[in-house]
Amino acid sequence: MEKELKVIFTSDTHLGLKTDDIDRTEEIISILLDTVKQATKYKEQEYDVILVFGGDMFDNNNPSEKLISEFFKVLNEIKRHDIKTYYVVGNHESIADPDRLSCLSFLKEAKVGYPSITLVDDIKTAHIGQYDIGNVYFTFLPHITKAVLEKNHRNGKALDYDSVKGYIDFKANQISKKLGQGVTHYVFSHLNVIGAHAGSEENLLKKSEVYLPQIFTNPPVGYNKPVIVQAHIHTNQIIGNINIIGSPLYCGFGEKGRKYSADISISKSIGKKDTLNLIETNYRPFMQLEVSFIEETRDFFEVPEVQEFYIDLMNAKEKNPIVKFDITINPENNTYAWEEIRQKIMRLLKGVYVKPILPRVLSKKHVRSAQQKIGLTVKESVQVYIKKNLKKEPEKAKRIYNISKKYFMEA
Image (cartoon, rainbow, N blue to C red; front, top):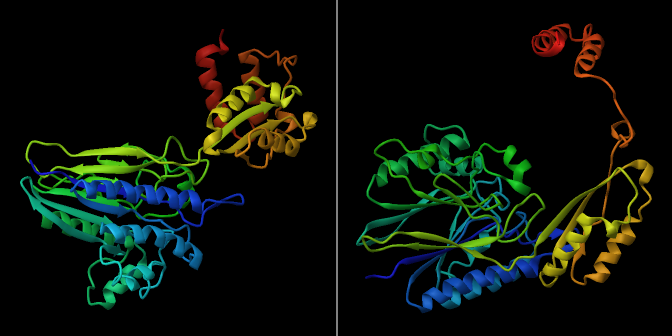
């Protein structure tokens, strides 16, 4: 039986990322080199291997020469082991210029020295091979901007679309019709996903309408339903046929769960199923604690939640976690020396970094002591509300009165 096709996938490493003033470059390069090692291991075992970078390798579209030089450590390992590699352009790397669609032009310039690496800055389908199970195709969906459309129009590919979304849908329909059924089709995407937990990318996703085409997520009868391997969103999750791998490191505190790259086995033989396995990466943990100090002044280190969290920090100490405290305080009890507390934790747990503690002050009018009593019945509360709002919102007050009367005003 012929060996499977192995695909190693990672994305969203965001080279150049800093957390507070912590440069994450060493962590990121280590994770990338581990990813290449996984591909190399399979190559040595005589598998056909493909490495896919799903985009946002860099945190911005103007990386420094130093960062590019660091990334070449990864590229040189790929070259040394002759690993076939696809690099899909992400939103952080794209440039709104039809002559230069991304900051990754150095990959094209280096093509002579790195022939196994293909830069994908427009929608592309590649025929990977023909095996006992039939044909295998990969489709790559990079981040698309209007510059991509303009470049296509310049090259005489003027078609009936006037928006990025229209272009993505048009191309996806073309690809689906061409491939038909009876093929193995994998889609590697750096587009948005409706209904996904976005984490640290949430605000960015809200600003974009560049979503996965519906024909790939919910195809009509007679069309192939591909396996989608999704980048761009940093928290690992599965939605239908969309496998969101997530970033292999923590980029922000809005992200959840552990961090992975993906190890995909695509069968070449009839009767054997494809598999997608997650490989946990050597990431630096982000740990967060929410704790309230609004009712009384307590010694920070004697609060049960803090003591439990401190034990977790002790256990994670070797991984050098980055810690965030979300503190809520009563302004009357704002007597804590937060910077001293922060420095003490970092002294006690060398290697642990605690972000500056900026407590959220709860307004006095929202603070109620345990001794306070309202003393109103439900009926009296409704009557007070109606009296206060009858003139301001007569329709709403009347509606609440009618509902209240039905259930308990007569009681």
